[in-house]
Length: 116
Image (cartoon, rainbow, N blue to C red; front, side, top):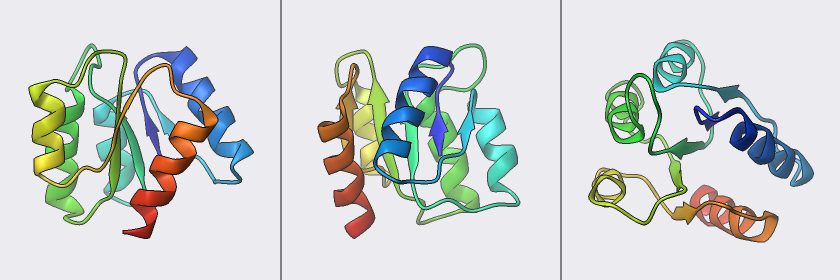
């Protein structure tokens, strides 16, 4: 599942994931992700850290792991690795990928996270 407030970023991530032969569900906010995950499951989240308006990536992940405690996630951001990224990783998220990302970077991070 791709969770990103920027339409362009959602499209790029979706194209990359489809090229890697993954099924993709896409949402534009943390709130939409939470709504979806109350009744569905996904193997992996690709989670943007800065999303507006609404809850950010860290708060989204905190709420998701309350309903899905072992949910795997990769953090994506156009900004440098922040304390929020480190906190998300402390509570269970995997790799941090700085945007812009490419097929190789995202493919390796996904494979490593899914193989854990």
